[in-house]
Length: 92
Image 1 (cartoon, rainbow, N blue to C red):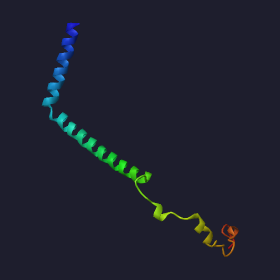
Image 2: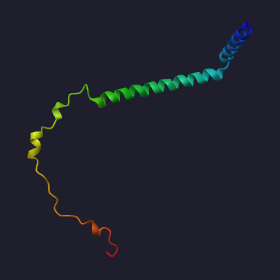
Image 3: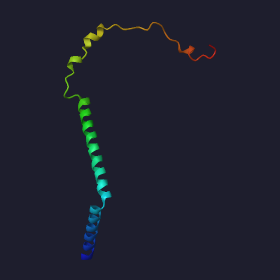
Image 4: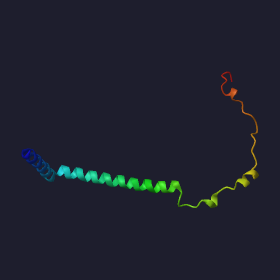
């Protein structure tokens, strides 16, 4: 059991030492940090957009339409009926 623990400890120390000496690991770490920062910025942008879309902090009562005013708008009737059968004719 002691040999197993010593073996695991030695392996962990060896891996840590290799990572500390290897610049590729540090470069990869920088790439990961940069990616994390970009994702955090996207999350902040998403949160800001969601706050806007939910509209809890906005007062839109000035642009509300009164349902009683809708009756005063005249209905526009079509001038003529459009016949779609002429569109599909080949002999024209």
